[in-house]
Image (cartoon, rainbow, N blue to C red):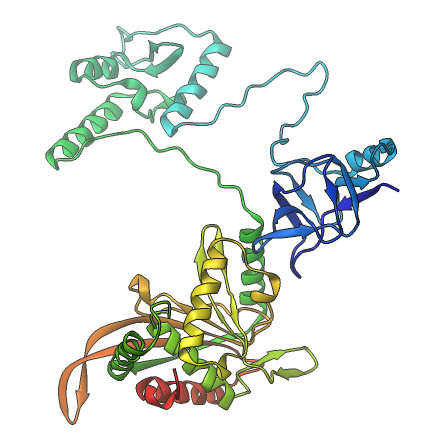
Length: 450
């Protein structure tokens, strides 16, 4: 018996999905467990599998269609089955695809052409043109008795500009295009002052060695993808609902940089070429995990009527990608060596950028690290990734004067900012965690093993 294939919830936070690619084609045999299509969720592009066997009789929604979870996207059954009723039900409930966004025009209604506004100047010109058409106004000239400026119309193609004769005369003399000047007079007419102001700006541009261009770049409307919508909602909820407070610590990074160099020297001499090169961030991840093991009150979540202290230490790493960011999670981070962490971070980051992460690879973390040091950011605050109770923001290592043995010398400093949920983490608890983390980073040899 033929069945409808519905949009499956492929991640815990998924409410809708976009069909990126159909793997199976109409008429192809399908076995339970076969990949039917690639679907973009709020987090990644994932494979949607079939739950039944048969033949893919009909694809109801093509590539690019955005569907709510539970909506029909195809029909599977036996060859030759009558699927008329199923198809009717599927089509009646199916939402529009991304390309079907135009609203129907009501019968006998006036057809209106909507044209994007290319610039502020064009908007003024088009508005004035409509006014002129409606009023059927004619060009006017200078009033001979009062010697005052009265509007005159300049034509260019199908566009007409309302301007005073004096303004028009100056514009012609100076080689200015009235269509590129915004009028400030009544009904948007261009006055002498408008032309002189435009002329002054043009001359200033030449004086400064820059080209003058009065055109305003077009506004661009960027559609929100599922990932950006989810990020916006989650971060807004976190900032509004969680009582954030922040703790800052500056770390002497001299030993940290030396330790990284020693580890990479060891790697070159003793490990295969395929072994990943260790970064400062890899060492920070290990130090954070070791600190969380010693301070379980930070490795916790708020649960309304209780606080959950996790037995596991699963550290998430914020990874930037087109359209947002993801936080792939290193499971049991405290039990892994720096070399293992380095390899796993690089593998998960690549999957994240390729949108190939599975739900179990980016959910249920216990703590998150966000590092913007590679962008030259000295310090910043990060928003907690719910339901976690803390997130660590890592800045860049910078050369600064430090005091050693009573002498001011050149040093390397690293800024850390811990954001805490005050319902779970008190100030003293967060401070103790940072003190332990500082001890590990300033004496990284304490992080045994690579």
